Each structure stands twice: as structure tokens, then as C-alpha cells.
Image (cartoon, rainbow, N blue to C red):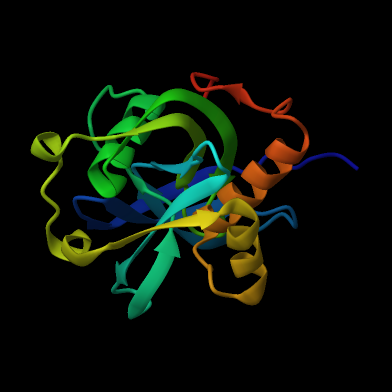
Length: 198
């Protein structure tokens, strides 16, 4: 079966904000016609599975307004600093959200979070050889992060939380399952932190 080359015939801007932009595209379809598709363009993000020497991961729990509740997540954040490498963003977010530094980073997985309507990707890193950020250097958290909960959980228990439905954040689900699989394979599947992006 041959692959059809979908082309964007037109693009209409709908919304532009600080985090994402929304367009309506008219796209050629495999059946020969065209269809309109709304597209959310996003800056992209990173997430971090921070694993300590005894096999625990750090999870954060914070309020997410879109779903109206607190979710267990990985330390993560937008790639919103110009020209900052993804692994540097991951290190910064780990410091800001979990008060941790890591001297060893590897790439675990890349994810398209909602490819049906958004171009957002999130790159999930494994961080090891952890140390605490000194008190006087810690980031002052504001907004939803002001009261975020930080917890250390055994990696196998975190995976069990995924299957119990306690962890539903897609990046956390993917990152935790990937970390457990990588551990079980003796870390042989890890890629360099600076591997080419999607």
C-alpha cells in the first residue's frame, strides 16, 4: 500500500498565547478530498525520572486546573528558554521542582502527547547520581507549584500506581514504565542525553 502525502492547503490563525498557538488547517485527505483540522502548536517539554541509589523515584503532586485536581507527575516543564538544550531544561526543572541535582543524565523516551490535535513533544530523561540543592540556592516556587508535594517512591511501587490508576499523567506513565524496563535490561537501552530530537 502506498503512502499518501498529506498537504496543508491553508492555515487560519485562531489563538496565540504565551504557551501555545491554535490554527485551523485545511489538509488533503487520503480519500482525495480535504478536511479541516485544528492544530495546537506548543513549545515542547521535558520530564525527568530521577532515580536514587536505592531504586526510588521522585514524584511531585500538584494541582492541574484543566482536570480540576492534583496529579502525580514527574518533575517537568516547558522548553521555554531560547536555545536551551533539552537536557539543560531537564536539569533546571529537576532543581526547581524537586530541589535535586543530577550528575548523570540519559534519554529514556520521546513522546507525542496528543498527536490527534497537537504537535507537542515531551522528552523524558533518566537522572541519576542525585544530590540535594543547598537550602540557600533553592528556587522559590509560586502559583500551582507553591504547595506541590514531593515524594520518594520505589520505582516498582510507582509502576504499580500506574496500573492502579493513581498515576494518569501521560508523561509520568511513559517515563516510569520506560525506566523500569531500562532497569530490567541493565540500562542497555538508554540513549545519550543529547541524542537528536524528534
